[in-house]
Length: 235
Image 1 (cartoon, one colour):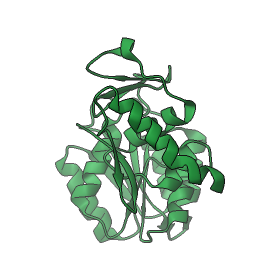
Image 2: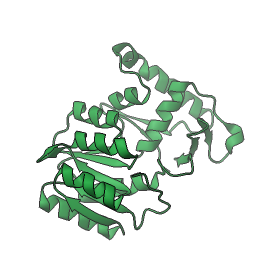
Image 3: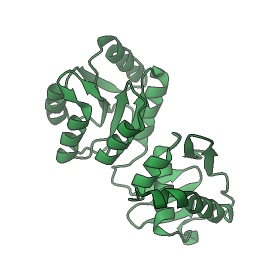
Image 4: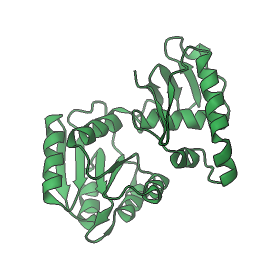
C-alpha cells in the first residue's frame, strides 16, 4: 500500500471514525485543503478500503466498534508504510507509546480542533517520510536518512555535524514530529532505549545535541517544553 506523493494537495486520506459527526467535520476541513477523503466506521472496512483505494494518509481512531485501532495499524504495517495519525479519546501515555511502537506517525487526542488536525495531516503528508528523496529539511537543518548525516541547510552537506547514534536519532524523531511536542517516552522508543537507566541520562544526550547545534548557530532548534517534552524548530 505504499504510494509516492509529490504534493500534499490532491492526496487521498482515509478517515476511520465511528462517530459520523466527527468524521464529517474532519472530512470537510481536509476537503478545504484540497485533500480527497473517504470515511468508514470500522476496522474491517478500513483495511478493505486501504487495499483498494491506497490512501496516502490514514486518520485512525483507536476505539472502533469491531476492535482496536492498534490491530488495524498492525495490519496496515504488514502490507506497507502508509502514514497513520492515531486519534483517541483518552490521553494515555501507554496508548501513545503503543501507537508509536507499531509505527504511527502522529497522535491526536479528542476533543481536538479540526483545524489543527488538518494542519497535522498536511504536515505528515509534506514531511516526505516515505518519499523517494531521503533528505528531510526542518528549521534550518537538513537530514539525510539514508546516509544518517545532519548539516545546517545554509552551509551545505560539506558541513555535516558529527553526532553519536543517539544524538542523530533524537534529531530525526524531533524533525519528523515537528511542530508537535515529543514526550520522553517517544524519544526513548526512537532511540531503541526503554530502560529506567537511560531515562535518567536522556537529558545529557539532549544537552550535548543542543550544544553541537549551538556551535552552528542553531542552538534554538531544540526547545524544551517544561513538563511535556521537546520540540524542533520548523522555520
